[in-house]
Length: 299
Length: 278
Image 1 (cartoon, one colour):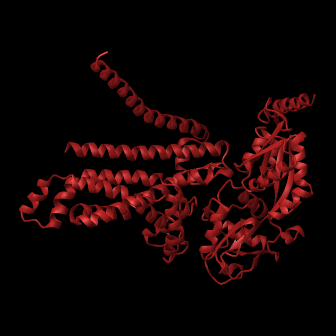
Image 2: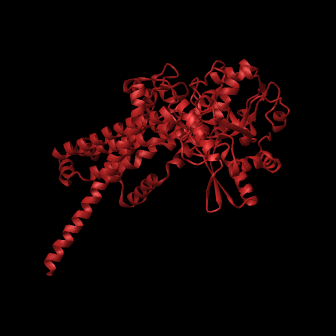
Image 3: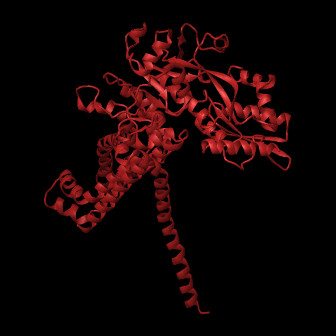
């Protein structure tokens, strides 16, 4: 046997092994989806897909399984996290890539990465004992601190590393010539950042935000600890529409985690149905990130 | 012969009801293999720690018995006993009429009682309420402490999640047909409820007796404070049974273990853990 054929033999084996590993994750996603769907079918069949999606009352004891309140809860808390987290993350990314001297980058970047490593239950605990009492100070009838605002702040910090890291990378990847050209034309540093670098890095920044969204939708335990978990359609507490964020809510993930250990029969199936809705939402969000990235690459 | 009788009961149950009990998964005497008898116990997470202690104590007396205890909640406990997927089901509430209808063969053994206390934030200046007031507060009709004799301030209700044995016992004992308000802050454990009540001004909730401490203020109900003594004299009204459920009358090791629990030694453990002996 010559070394040449041995090498092709190794090449082939490695190729197969790598193919199998790649297919494994695809298979796992597929299996999880099929299993969740199968468990959810009795609920969809018995209660009706539309009735579940549009129902606002969730009282398993009475056979009512509407998940609209949870969809709204997940959506609003994610929106809140984006409103608070994106400016913060974008500011961090611009500072780290364009402004900060090397030694500051060396301190700040690892600490952002450290944020990503903190377990979510610790964020939840922090939210429960520090943020919730702070939010409670806002005067509004029915504001108990637990609710969308506290949850959004916790979530904003949790998605910060994802958004900041990818955005920083996107801004750094803008070709050097753009910067130099802009400065050579007499633009100030800020004009260069806001008019040239950010527009050029936009696709990367958008996909960073969308990936953060996906992470936010899936967060569970920290949300359970601070959001109040009441199954109500969030509504403004005062005349100010922003006070909707003081309302309590429940997320799709929280609904599953809070109730699964007790659920049997249709109730259990309805929780799997909640999982299917969440799965589809996250799939939509993630594939739109992929779409935006591809569109960005083509430009 | 005994097995035949059990099978007959199974078949009778099957023909009458369809879903209750499944033939061929052992008898209510536990599962025997190589001289060791295994008893499987499944259900309420409130009863679980107590059952674990009782099984340890019993295994020390009879080393040929192995009791495995696992959680899942009261509904799972009753269902497991009815379908005979476990030798014993645990439930921290009364067995529902519908559950007995689904499987009339189940036998209920009350092993202890547990009180549910109504607790408020320590800053609340109301010392006691009536059952009617409790119902009003938890259903969301009474929303201000001044309506029950305290200083004006919004009442924030906290409660356990749907499906919890403590919640369903509280609903049975206090709420009648009223529903716990949708605005309630829901927390998935007794511990989280206690923290919420202790840190939220104007907050009220219900807790198992085992979780009472100085961080929350226990409310007297009709003048009786939530103490084990007031439960045994009958003056504290919010009390639930802790039940073990078997499919048919238990025999063999299962019967002996249940006898141990309801006997003197078992009840001493019950009392030592802060529950009320039967």
